[in-house]
Image (cartoon, rainbow, N blue to C red; front, top):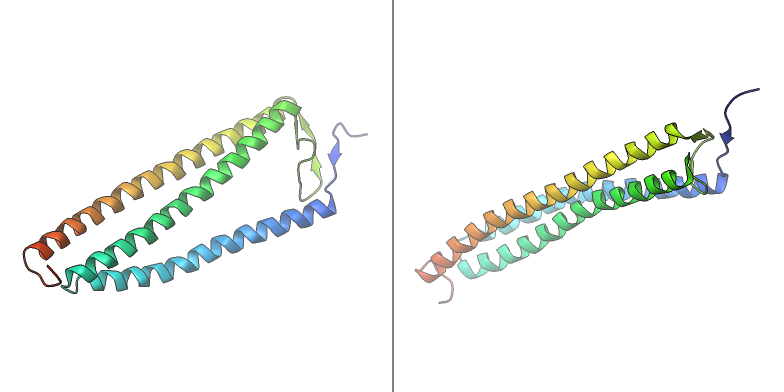
Length: 170
């Protein structure tokens, strides 16, 4: 007789979990592919900025800023959502005193962990959630500040060029 209990995976839950995993992988692959399009789009906008026509350059700068703003928001959202899920999982593990907690979707049959072993899983989930939250928000804050700084400098240069006669309407 063994000293441990096995929690059986539900085939329907397994299919749902695999579908959600594939959906998330698809979203990540889509964002990766989108990054190549964004790179060429921003290159086109920068070419317009450097064209010497301040009015067109200011409009291109605005479009590029909106796109980067959206991408930074998406980049921050994914780690924050993962952290929220891990926090939810950790609190459910602590509340139930077991891992996997009741009702948890599992992909394969697992050994039921209780007591200190379950608590260690919850602590590990909390640590990873904190790292994801700090990393996601910190990277978003840094990128937003850095990109904002670059765009403010470009905007100031374009306004000076427009005001002091670099073409465009005055």
